[in-house]
Amino acid sequence: MFDQSVYKQRRKHLKLQIKSGYILLIGNDESPMNAAENCYPFRQDSSFLYFIGPDIPGLTAVIDIDHDRTALFGTDRTMDEIIWTGTQPSITRLAAQSGIEHTGTPEALVTFLARQKTQNRKIHFIPPYRAETLVRLETLTGISHREIIKNASVDLIRAVVRLRSVKTDAEVDQIEGAINLSHQIYDHALKTVRPGMYEQQLAGQLTGIVNAHGRQVSFPTILTIHGETLHQRHQRHRMGENNLLLLDSGTQSTEYYASDITRTFSIGGRFTPRQKAIYEVVLKAQAAGIENTRPGRRYKDAHLATAESMVCDLKALGLMRGDVKEAVHNGAHALFFPHGLGHMLGLDVHDMESLGENFVGYDDQTRRSDQFGLSSLRMARELKPGFVVTAEPGIYFIPMLIKQWKAENRCAEFIDYSEVEKYREFGGIRIEDDVLVTQNGCRVLSKNIPKAVDQIESSLSL
Image (cartoon, rainbow, N blue to C red; front, side, top):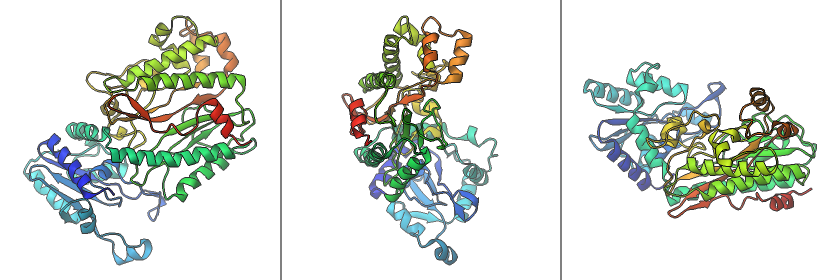
């Protein structure tokens, strides 16, 4: 945990934005794999971590704005629990570490909430993303589980997004700590990968590096020779010499801040001429996006700059044609680049998106497009100093998508389908870095992880 002053200051700012009523923050419980005592690794709710702090299951906090007090509710471990799972700090001790003076049992929480309902006080809670949290909210508030989401406090959601979006120096340090561990992962991957290995062999080694540091991955690792599948989850393929390997992975820092890095490289140690050409298109497009990542600009504009760079270079390779800006305006690039440039990064790898992606990445001035590809842009709104975003363009040759667009003759004035067909079995390339928006521009936090062609090839120990 950070110093208690950090949590007290965060709660102070939150109370100033909400102004009245009380806030109910429910921490996560254990999540069983297949029996109550056999659980997945515990991960605390990120907003609970941000405002309260303790990384312990079974806790709930109430921030009473009208009476300017915060209380932490939970149960100290019984002797039976201590025998099986060990000791943990008492609820009183946990509260003190977070600068909270008041504590209570779960029964006391029920009594408190019942009293607030009789007084018709405004309750604020954020939308749950776990079924067990939804059930707890139904029990505690009396609101039907079918109505919980629509009764989530928009004022609280907006306040949480405003506060968590801008990272302090200490938070940036935590993200950089996660990136440092990611550096070890990519260094190991480049030095270890060999033709003939199975994806799962390398994936297991990389997870072991994270676990050996007492950390968890920030999301399930994507490690695949089928990079054209954007979020390929299984790792069963045998890696061949001329395959491209796409590795999209992240770790958590000691305080649970995330990294999110992607690199793509040739398993044989050298890119083929065709692989190198497409890789350079993606790398140049990423540079265009990062160049446009600065305060006062919309991230949507950085995305569009990325797309224009991509179309310009794909024209040079004969895959696209026509006016670059018109091609992007009509969404022709989305055949190759069907997702957005990036997303917010912080305590969540897709930071705060459980609160609603439109609250995080959009605002009244920037509305979501319904155009294929552009509609998948998670982060579009104006950037501010302290935002941390990912910049992750990619080019993918997705056989079924190519088949569909070709059959529809879609964007044929911009796409040479006869040339595209030659790349049908190419796969996909994505390059991703984590970027801090500064007062005057931006800083790439993950710049030390190799991504230039010569750096990648010299790092492959074959």
